[in-house]
Image 1 (spheres, rainbow, N blue to C red):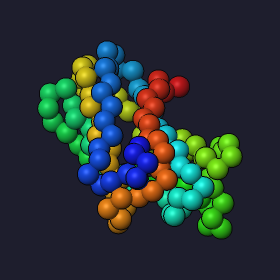
Image 2: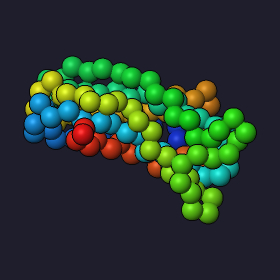
Image 3: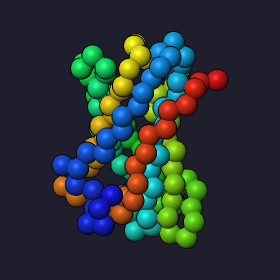
Image 4: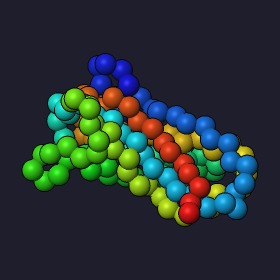
Length: 125
């Protein structure tokens, strides 16, 4: 993320090659924030573009702090890492390259102190 903050016009993009669409997967959003982040949550708009060009959009609220303002996740110093479940036991409809486009959905044009956004896809147990 830029040091100036994450703008609503800045899209984080991940391309993922899926070879075996029959295997179910779990999706997680990884969010790293600094102690001075002014909110206890962040809304993300996640657009999935399928290999055939069709797309779907989801909204995910990531809770980063409890009701008393204590940061959740693991921390080192004033940096906190959260892994938020997004989808479970999902089967991809087809093999190929999927694109995931992530935008912040907060009310401010630019939000400070979100340091990293990641997407984790793992084989479901």
